[in-house]
Length: 154
Image (cartoon, rainbow, N blue to C red; front, side, top):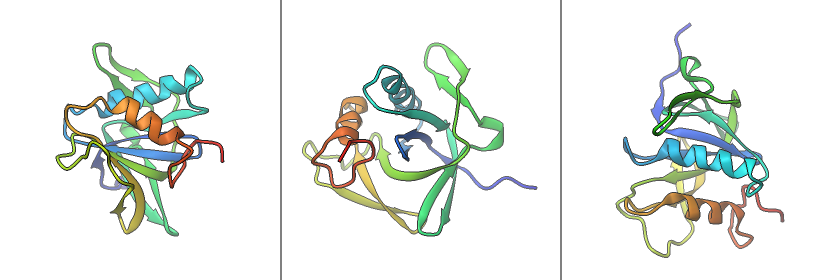
């Protein structure tokens, strides 16, 4: 059986929903994914687990966007300066938000954005090329004022 087509991105399950992390090669997708997983281990986030690094498979199903790793990459992540490492991973997750790294139209004070992926509308956070994405993503995930809360308690 042939594998589904893949998209250049990473995905991390954060709480009950996955973040789809997109951006050009070298923009820090894997680094951000690893930092989010580490944030959960240190208690800054309640839960985070790798879904896929480098390539993801996306599927629209019953009004939700599902993400999974291609079989050959399941559980593998590139840790800059260390190499490829095996981590616990989720086989499939529902996407709850999209992070676009190195976004040319990122704003210093962005308004709540939305993007459509495979026919599914999702909240979006755009990060400028020169910006460290981790503080903004952590604030986005845990802010009680956000329209879509992925991990914050209501």
